[in-house]
Image (cartoon, rainbow, N blue to C red):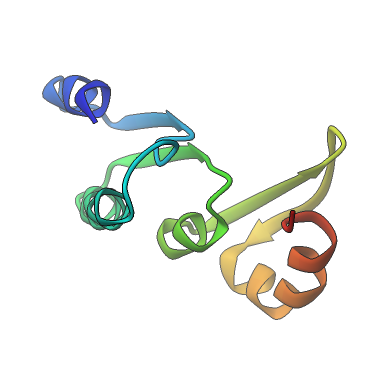
Length: 94
């Protein structure tokens, strides 16, 4: 969270986040999601690499799914939603 705060101090146009929810308590994950939605609304572009698919989908406009280093899906979040069951079952489950 401190690293995100430091990055935001510079009033960036682009924020790159790699697994920001890793190790956070569920309450902090929800706060992080709320923050990203707010930043998105303020025009900040966010490049998010995240394994928490629910959170990532809640804040994204575009989705890229990798399977064994290969792009298996690239498109709008709405299109991902239409194929969610297939893609989650195949690539986004443990």
